[in-house]
Every structure is written in structure tokens, then in C-alpha cells.
Image 1 (spheres, rainbow, N blue to C red):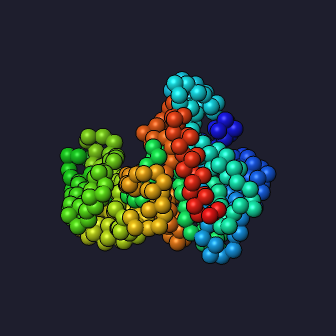
Image 2 (image 1 turned 90 degrees about the horizontal axis):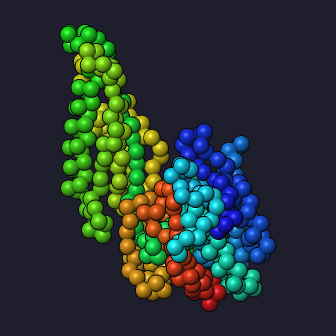
Image 3 (image 1 turned 180 degrees about the vertical axis):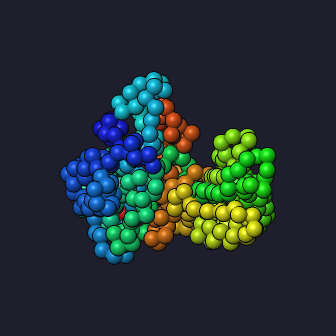
Length: 377
């Protein structure tokens, strides 16, 4: 844990803050090779300084029905002034371990590797894979780059995101969109001299809210605390002076679709609905573009073998969460996936992030049990 947290690997859409994750990847590779794992490093593009790691021990032929223990190697950016201790130095205090990535989620690799080391290579009847990805906190590029052929030996996956040791089999997706209305500036004393982008945006917003009501009436899932898909109109910016007709207005929205809803279908529906909102005679134009590709919703069935297995080990029923993970990308490769890890998501993405020491032992016991059940027995 100390070595991983001490190795910086911030990922960010701000290129001035973005860092390579290769030092973490090479650290993991050295440890895993020493334990007898076969290690592959998958670089992501040229000169990016980003890579995934796929490390496997045991038989790795196609259809071997093995287990993946998966996590991301990056952290969010940080504000050093708000930390009570060095964010890159593992600090134990009040039965908690503090550090950037302690909960979300570098510590997971320490637990996974320590647990794997309890078994001999000859013990494995089915393969165990430790998967480490890049850029989960910024673009999901690492998970998106994974290929079915690389993981064809695996049937099950555990992602160690912080869930307070509760198994998670469902989460909503996330998509963020930018809507820009352009008009024509002019003196406010004569509206006919221009075309108001803010007034055009009002028509766009009315259509968005109508669409939101229709989606929430159509889609419901009582498993979630917020049982319907949500849309947040998060920002709106336009104009520069009260006596000038506004020529440019942008709104950014966040949509959280439920499992069973397709991001591609939602974007197509949105584009179709907005196509006729602004009359041609208004001289207003609307440009719509995704801010990033989006994270699909995730669901592993309640009656899936992995769901039952983990519920039995943990004596807890699998639940749902609102935050997104890399689980839908593993599911799309045909891998049953459950998200479960120590720590609380409430501690993630903020100063003085920590993982409770009392959750580490039970989690390592869980990892040992799941490896034993899938890979050894």
C-alpha cells in the first residue's frame, strides 16, 4: 500500500495535471512476475504514457472459466493544501489508513497480490488474472481498450472499488452533453437587429425538461434509491452585457440512465428531438456534442452464479449504487462481474481519503475464499 500510494498516477482531462500510470504498472509487473504470473503490458496509443496490465497465473486457455481481480491504477487530482498529511505517504491514524488512492483504489492491488501469494502456482486449476487499467478517473480509456481475446480465459470478475464490503451488481450509466446555441449580437434597444441565443436556449431547455419527464415516466427501477433516470442541467453560460443581444449560449447536462437504457439510443433520441426546436427563420443555430463517450449502465443478474457465490461468502444481498465503474466494459466481454471492495465511496475524490483498517482483514479473507472457490477447488 505504501509503495502504490507513494507512486503518483493522476489522470485528468486537464493535460497540465495528467500523469503517466506506467510507474504503477511496472511496480505491479515486478511483484507479479516474482510470484509466477505471466504479465502483459498493453500500451494505449503512442507516446501517451498510459497502459493496462494483464497478469495471469494458472491455465490460460480459451474457456478456462477463470477469475479476474480488477482495479484502476489512476487517482483523481488533489489539492495539497486541504490534506492534513502528505497525500502520497501512507499514514495510519485512528485505525484508518490515509493517502490518495487508499480507498479509490490502489490499496486493492496490495490486497489482491498479498492474497494471491498465499497460493502456489501448482494450486491453480483455473486461471487467476489481476487486471490493472488506466484512466478510469478521466476517460475510461483503459477499460475501453480491453479485447475479448485478452480475457478469453476468464468467466468471472471482481472489481475492488470501495463499497464498504457490500456486493454491487448494478449501477447507473453516465453521459455528459454540451448544447450550444449561436445567434447574432446587436443593440438591445432593437431586438430585430440580432438573434438572442439565450432565448433560443430557453426553448432548448423546455424541450429537455419535457424529455426528462417522459424518460422518468417510462423507465423505473425500484432497486435504486433514485428509481428513475435523472437529468441535471449543470451549467449555463451566455452573453456578456445586459444591453447587448446574446450571440452565444452553452448548457451542459448530465444524464444518468438505468440498466437497460442505451447511451447510443438516448443520444440519437436527443439529437432528433432538438433538431426542430429552433425555427429556421430565427437565425439561431444549435450544436450538440457529447463531452465524453459516456459510461454505460451496468447489471449482473440477481440469479447469476457469481452473484450467489459472493452473497453467500459475504452474507449480504447484492445492491445497486449511483456511481459508475468499469464493470459494464467487462460485462460486454461476456464476463460476470460484481463490484466489491473495502472503503467507502464517500471518502473518494476528496482530501484526507482513507480506508478503515477494520475492513482490510475481512476483504482479504473474501478474496481468498473467492479465489479458492473459482480457481483452486
